[in-house]
Length: 404
Image 1 (cartoon, rainbow, N blue to C red):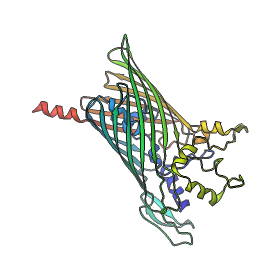
Image 2: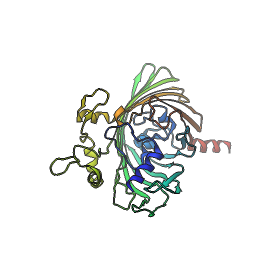
Image 3: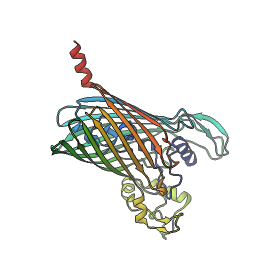
Image 4: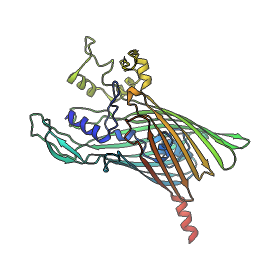
């Protein structure tokens, strides 16, 4: 089962850190992907950027500061289009702001992994499966101060890697079952206006702890897999040049709150490193809260294959932080141009890429597009376009009322 699980996940996402030292592998890897074109155009960041309709994934607390009263968006991301045509990510997101203090929001993520040929341990193909993953969440956000808001998100996650297709035709049976769990996000957003001679600028901080929840099992509890818990921290500054032209500069870092399987804690009573099934069993029994805390201090260190030097455990922990930066230009808050960059350490996945994006906002409709340019060969979204279409629900209502 374990071999089948890893094979399916690796094939379906092709985003595992194949070059990584002490890689971190989780269930539901689709939740680590930027689902909307707005954030994707800025280097996959969004914790502290200007509030928009897609804030649910990045920082739901931003909805308390959004200008619109209600909206809904639909996003589409094709996956590995150079190789296959049936893997894609779809994302729906909506919100409603009750008043100037509070809002509710929800989103639905669906990741179709295309067709996967299942094989037994002898390598014999026995059936085709269409694995998929989806997540449904709802959030409540509220202003605590003129400049501060918080939000709580509850998420249901479901993963079906083989559509219930199981085989017992060999001495080692392959039995996979749908897995599910619940998780929560806690987010904070600080946004302060600063008056300048050319207009009002905004300084913002964003913090989000996401996917804090239970583990997932594809074999009815025998093996427990961590979900992609994550900590995200961002800062942004929006600078106006006049009443029409603005630039926003944003920087963000995020770290997976998932422990390393081959860590300095995975040792037996005599201090000897666990291996094989003993290591797998130890990792499976590790609780989620212990895993979150352990993820900050469990790196064992390694030898750099390029330089031959020893990398300390503290240095390896820092390498697990992924960085992103983006710049957005807006004209009259209707036309947008974006550029971004995302950086991951060579030994932790080596996903490095530039992004380009554009947006157009009319009275009731908003369209965003993004394009990814990978600088390393480990990004499955290289040269991929992403699209997001949004609608201002109250703008539509006003338009209908005016026509009457």
